[in-house]
Length: 300
Image (cartoon, rainbow, N blue to C red):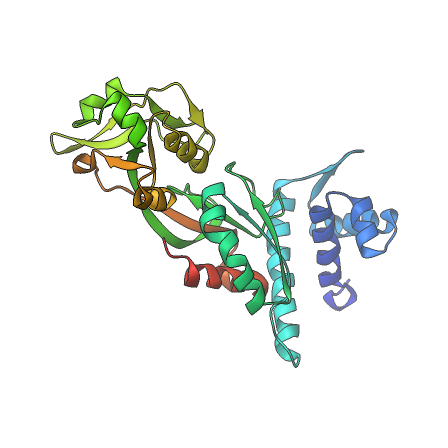
């Protein structure tokens, strides 16, 4: 069978829809096809490629390694086709849905305040916002862009840096009046140090001891799943917390929190990136537009 006899883009679109809808029946409804037709088309695609793309069950589908790789490439190819068609049309304004996953602090302080401006500038784009501090699999969660704070692990994801922020140890005036203000790193042993309680949290607080980088293990009676929750505990006078400066800048200015041990702050920076699957040149215009906007407008 020659390539001209095969609607390869159509096969790709059906396969991508099966993955994104989570099954043949859901994809069939979205495509206005019968489930059997969708199943046969994917089976034909697998036969032509000589590789199994999905493992089928009665409840769900699971991508094989070959299926995952083909899905990523198919998404890029379809995005290129979409861009080519829009570029040839009279109006090439970016449009469509963009699903973005962000950690709670970034979402509250940067993303949500910028949404009205973005949608006013690009009215044909629809945003699907998910705020969570859990690290997700972009492919599994069908997410276009995720915001990650901290060091990035090597992966298939591509990253664009949005900014960086200094870390600071803070306490409420009421707590410091009650328990004293730490003057040297050793004083932390006598304080209630509040911790982040999620898997990616660092084990110790970086700090300078005798001018050399070191780490102090925080010991306290409470932990929180995200920085904003930790900030609230600190503002409430429960203990000391080590938090990104952008999250507590207003509290410091208003006197609700006080930085401590600044002479021993190593000045370490936490970087924030937008990550996505695939090389930038293969991104749909709607996703590339959002990334460019965030790089332009986020100021940490």
